[in-house]
Image (cartoon, rainbow, N blue to C red; front, side, top):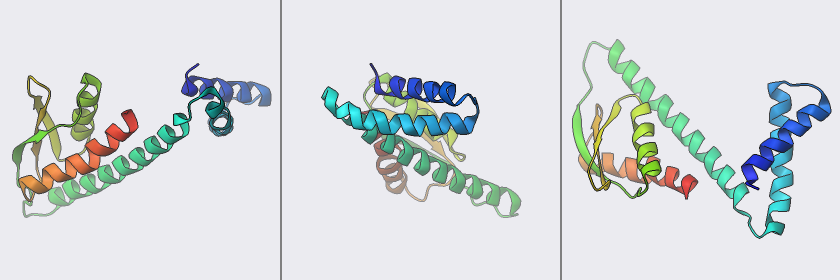
Length: 157
């Protein structure tokens, strides 16, 4: 059975055992189920579930931090009389190979204020991105590759 599904099942069983169907009980049940699955999963010959969950939590924290910073940057540009934007379009080479990986990289970039994924090349090796606040091409590509794409691929692979 998939470790995530088992964890969710254990969380549901916990809520039924306690008799309270609240978000807090679901979260507590999920954490307890996570501990159980983390201990039992190596006995099945795998132990990747805990690492993947920690990588996902790390990615979520990174993404929300980037979301906050870019939102503040756009808001600052809106409320000040001077325009700070330097709109540009860059071709970002991708390490993502599957349709799912490419789609998620493009969507997470688009969710960040100030950036918009425009197109993907036919061979899925290049993502064309419009950005409002890029100092240089090299810096922007490095931020995408070492930041968002690397952390997302770490979660997915």
